[in-house]
Image (cartoon, helix red, strand yellow):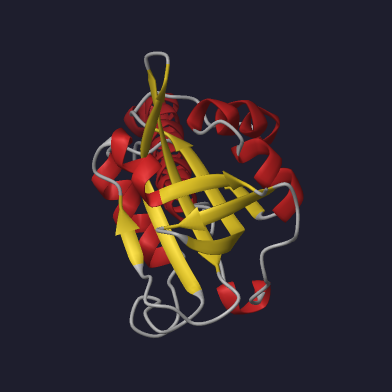
Length: 195
């Protein structure tokens, strides 16, 4: 039996086999990265039960939602747009001052939980995600001390999305609010100076 033709093809077979192994390894790595990307999504859930209800602190200014005094418990901020970079925690004070004058002082006094979420594609998507991940107890907060407000605001040309959770000292009829237009923020959320 003559193995000479087979011996001549051996380098080509070895090369083809090596290329096949390289392709299989590359596909496994690529598929693994796709799976890992999905599993590396940050957990955006905020448990309000762990935060607990707390009365608004005494101070020179008071935060109100539709006239009800509240304590700021959670702030979530995210940039709007596909290619926007994430908000850094050290940028939050500047953004709060741009969002509503006086809110930075409330933030410092109330010391809420603050989260910076990744960029969001739309304000509607952010609102839905926020309301799902920061769910109020009961019937969306009605009859409890909790309320949430979500919407957008501009800083220059950049759009930011913000979700706020507040609690009052006692149960109330407030619930979840979605601010459709920036002008609605000042109807919904107010800072009053104590006399």
